[in-house]
Amino acid sequence: MRAPLIQILLFSLLNSGSIMAGLVKSDTEDFIDWWQHTVFYQIYPRSFMDSNGDGIGDLKGITSKLRYLADTGITATWLSPIFQSPMVDFGYDISDYKAIQPEYGTMQDFEELIDTAFELGIKVVLDFVPNHSSDQHEWFKKSAAREPGYEDFYVWHDGIVQENGTRVPPNNWPSVFYGSAWEWHEGREQYYLHQFTKEQPDLNYRNPKVVQAMDDVLLFWLNKGVAGFRIDAVNHLFEDESLKDEPLSGKTGDSLSYDYTEHIYSRDLPEVLEMIHHWRQLLDDFSAKHPERPTRIMMTEAYAGLTQLADYYEDSNGVRGSHLPFNFHFITDVKGDSDARDYVYNVEKWLIYMPRGHAANWVMGNHDNPRVASRFGPASVDAMNMLLLTLPGVAVTYNGEELGMVDYRELSWEDTVDPPARNVGEELYQEVSRDPVRTPFQWSSETNAGFSTATKTWLPVHPNYLELNLEAQKAANRSHYQVYKDLLELRKSAIMRVGRFNIEPLTRWVFAFKRSYPNFESIITVINVSDKEQLVDLSEFLSQPKKLVVEVSGVDSKYQPGQSLAASALLLAAREGLVCRLV
Image 1 (cartoon, helix red, strand yellow):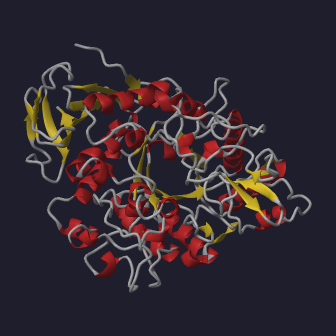
Image 2 (tube, one colour):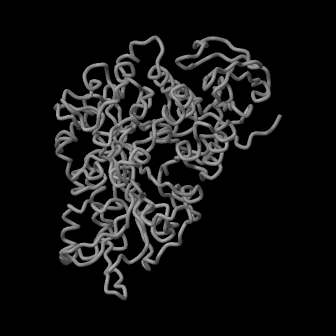
């Protein structure tokens, strides 16, 4: 039999200790920290639930739906930004890091949300946006006015005066959101750096006062009871002090496109890792001072190289950083036409590079990328959730993926509000807009999908809500939601927490992986990623002929939970996934 590339003992990865006989005692006893095997459910507050009829989701709306999360089996949620903001980038431009955006509610509303979540056993993680503030933040106003102590809170430069007397930006750096990364400020008579919109000036982390100010923000929210932070765009925190031109990438001749240069001076600098270590120490110190509370954690967002992300976990000197550097490979490296080898390769490479003693994580979707049903096709929804939720470690689900919600690609230019889409104009907006993945959650077939009683919602509801909604899926005999819920129930088992893991492509289009532990029945996940029916033999993969008993099957599967199947001749429908027990 061909030896698998990976055969990992998850408990060893998580605890870096020896395994004692009989350690796994029951399905209800935990041996790993809360965050190492949880499912983080990302809520986009603006689109989740509107409690006051203004067409915008809010904190009271989230609180009213926390019971839904608990009933589903979710024990941790990550909230996209809720801080005070002019909403140029819908919360990622913060004007006060210690205040709640009025559209979303009050600090009392937030405290009630935390209390309700605690009662339901749900931990709350906040989106922290440290790279930049809003240009409406008091810090920026004071910096622009050169007030003492704030002069260097942001990255300022005189620019370059050309021979003809024209003043131009100091270098060729483009913004992520199109256009120059530099904006002239008339009051200060200097350029300031903004790697995103011009209303989002970059903070200067070479200034210790900025670091201290952000530490204070983190401690403020930790004392409010949050379980940790998802840190946005962390690899953009530092720029090379030389501010040199970046080399051209050759990908495009459009100097305003982010793809125009290789970002060797404006992203992924070594100092980023030092800041991650700094914040990890802050969180560890807080957890040590409050041993009665759960471990406080950090998740980091960076679309970066694999070796760099591995260093975010732990560097070559053994210094620990991010608890969970987000793994976006199911978004960036696997597509609807990928074959079984692509899936296996992307699982294995993460586990190979991840240092021992850490938890793997898998992100299947988020508010910046097309939904699972739109990337892989509606027929793949159950199989992709099976993949996400039966792999070892942490899973991250974007709200609505449990229902198989799809992108609203027909959204009009008039209804488009996403900054990158507005920047490129009406002809190209559909190619870059993130609005289609941010439409309101589809709760029911009532007006506005039960999201709001408003005449007009901030983004239109997808018109398919009449058929695709939570209420209908709860009532159906089989539904994506019920499959998702069954998978969360299965994750509670000891084998899913601490079982060994190995994965192989069985054919070009079918792959399987196994979770096993001595004296426990193994769990097998097998997935067909093709558009055609596939017949596979799992005998070699399972080492010896055995019988499979279905644990979880998809909405359109001909197989039923509890049904026995022959491992030597398993027929899978197009895009079908199955989770089975090996007996």
